[in-house]
Structures are given as structure tokens and as C-alpha cells.
Length: 131
Image (cartoon, rainbow, N blue to C red; front, top):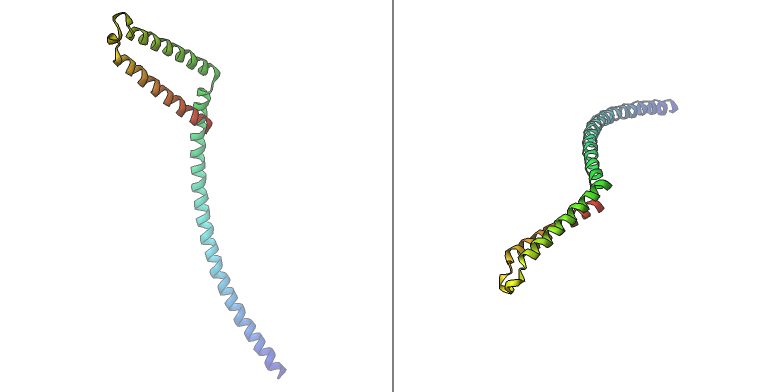
């Protein structure tokens, strides 16, 4: 009787071993397929990473030019000269010798529009510099 039990156990062990080996082969194929997908996705990620690095370096060069101290001094000089020109144009349009009727409102509108555009550009540049 004991021999019969041992023979049955050996047969069960062989059957279970074949089932386990078959499942291991299936899972190994799945792992190989997933590994290939992972390798392909990492290649894409590396390509994208290199492109992003190139764009960041170009942006850094552009930002370094904008934040350069000499460039900032030139900007200040240009702003001052534009403000002086606007004051001269405003004073020329305010020819008060003939009275209030002689004021040139078109020049005043142009100056106000230029001032608003300049403020918007400054705020957008400051926002981009702080972001």
C-alpha cells in the first residue's frame, strides 16, 4: 500500500512539474516582450530628453543675454531716451499759446497707446523672468 502512495506522489510531482514548467515558459515570453517594450520606450525617452536639453541650453543662452548687466544698462538708456522723446512730443502737442482748442489729441492718444504697450511688454518679460 505504501508503494502505491509513493508511486502516486511521484506521478503527481511529475504532472505538477510539467504544469509549472509550461507556466514558467509562458511567463518568460511575457517578460521578454515587456522588456522589449521597455527598451523601446527608454530609447524614445532618451531621444526626447536630448531634444529638451538642447532647447533648454538655447533658452539659457537667450536668458543670459537678457539678464546680462550691460544689456540691462542699454535697456535703461533706451527707456530714458524714449521717455524724453515722449515728453518732447507731448510738450509740442500742448501748444497752449492758442488755448485748449489747439491741443493735438492724436499725439496724446499715440503716446498713451505706446505707454500701455510698453508696460505690457515689461510685465510679460518680468513674469517670464520670474517663472
